[in-house]
Amino acid sequence: MRAVRPIAIAATAAAALTALSACTAKSDAKDGDAIQVTAADTKCDTSAKSVPAGQVTLKIENKGSRATEVEIVFPDDRIVSEKENIGPGTKYTLTAEVKAGSYEIACRPGMKGHGVRQKLDVTGSGASAKRNPALDAAVAGYRQYAQDQADETVPLAETFAKAVQAGDLAAAKKAYAPSRLGWERTEPVAESFGDIDPKVDTRADGLEDGQKWTGWHRLEKSLWQDKKIGAGDKKLAAELVTDLRDWQHRVGKAEITPTSMANGAKELLDEVATGKVTGEEDRYAHTDLVDFKGNVEGAQKAYELLKPVAAKNDSALTGELDKQFAALDKLLDKYRPAKDSYDFVSYDKVGKDQRKELSDAVNALAEPLSKLAAAVVK
Image (cartoon, rainbow, N blue to C red; front, top):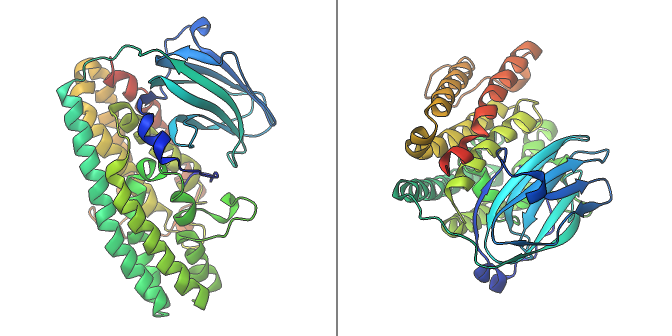
């Protein structure tokens, strides 16, 4: 679940502009070759307004009092590359590969709203490297995986919605977590469309001013906290299915590259660290470990598809990733009765020390995972 933003879809611009790839691992770019981005509570200063096509590196420093998100976006608000949760006083390097065209660098203090933006013109044709056929196969495999997850999610969401519409509280509770798994596994792809995520997966504290609360978490509140299903909930359940069908039909058009797969895997671990480990995601149902597992499975799928290329370029990295994925999977197995089951322990039963152990395992995986994109494009 990402913080929401206003979206204005421009079909013509979408067809004209295409991002090649994005990488949120550390960059080797020298400071003189990078765009210096100074983010604060009310400003987003950049050291350049025009760069040649190819690799664009942002050297970001957050001088504000709140966590911020910095993005390279198209004028229609589609995201080329981004880094969320850049804390006050924190620096980060963000690198993207972009074609000629018009872009914006957006700083979003508090990770809400349209943010403060600066224009960025990318000129020339840039150098295009020949794609490794193994990477083409990885992209094709991941695209099919994302579509399969969407195709499997819609029937599960329909089951959930039917239980809500029938007023069957117990059945709706049972169907809630399974209906979310496919979304959680491929959340970076789902979020790339921008307008769908705010409708289906926004928490109460992620709402913009004037935004109507809809989707899974609004229904979660009714089922677990309010302990009743109202007439409005039945309408919300139908809207959820409609929005997920929209996602299902659009997944095949998502922009997917090897580096977006690698960065997406890291984003999924960030989702775990900022939402699932803290218990904030499913705060009423306490089904956070199901979402946790879905995020990890999605990250692992992207990694496994990219591994043949990454292993040739950096075998030490893939060896460490194999080790850390196995360790996290083993730890998660402690919280479910059977290895292939998604019937995880309610997260409110997971103590402080156990949450710390889970957090440490996530961080141990996230650090090498942040280097995967760079290993893929060596």
